[in-house]
Image 1 (cartoon, rainbow, N blue to C red):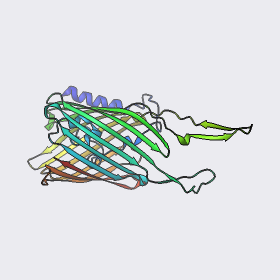
Image 2 (cartoon, helix red, strand yellow; image 1 turned 120 degrees about the vertical axis):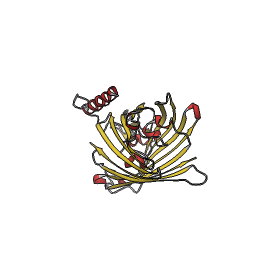
Image 3 (cartoon, rainbow, N blue to C red; image 1 turned 90 degrees about the horizontal axis):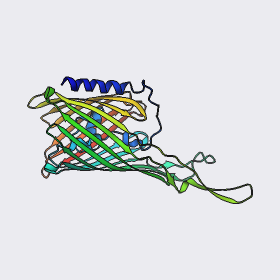
Length: 332
């Protein structure tokens, strides 16, 4: 256990000093940044400290290894009216395969709604509208290697559409969870997400015609460039700090190190009564606007399903005001 804690401290220290050691500032140089928007009201309410705690269908986003020990199938759907009238949706399905592990399928969608088209000559609008849509579809497999160690991976296709332009990329996530006997079962997680190909927009609006000095019409095509995906490394720990027959208090802490921002830190807690009623809270460190998070949950036994979970999260979005998240999960 001394070696484990030394490793934890070393990882946190190195991530926290990454920029101080001369890492290039890549802010604003990634495509498909919707992949960095947290999903699932339980995780969001805990401040995003969830990579070591995830053991439900939203683990397909947080840590694919989290579904390895699921004993029952689960389908989940999450929705949020995000900032600037954008919409964020997430749906996932996990199916355990008994001794063969578990498989999962996920869809993450981000939409802008209608955007008024403006030009230099018509700054008040042309009368036309367009939209922006981002989509990620993933397939996950995870398995418990031992009774303490689980491993999982996700292969996903990512697409961005903006008006008549689009870009596509392939990526994968890998994650692991190690369970210890320390203090009621300390869990340690490592995740690498969004490792894949670059994205380059292409489409008919990039082409145009102009008349040259000889009076001839010349067709041109605007050249675009490649953009990398928002690669992220997560390290997380979680434990049950207090546990009785009817009560449980879980604590979690995550470190998120992305290629286009300095390391961010997430802390969260969850109180459960009889595993039916839940209160959650968290805090996000080193984020531009988001800080405090809070939420609640309800786990009901309903005929036809093993259980139905309702979760809600509230995020202090700073200048973007409060953001509400809603999630429903069906176990069967």
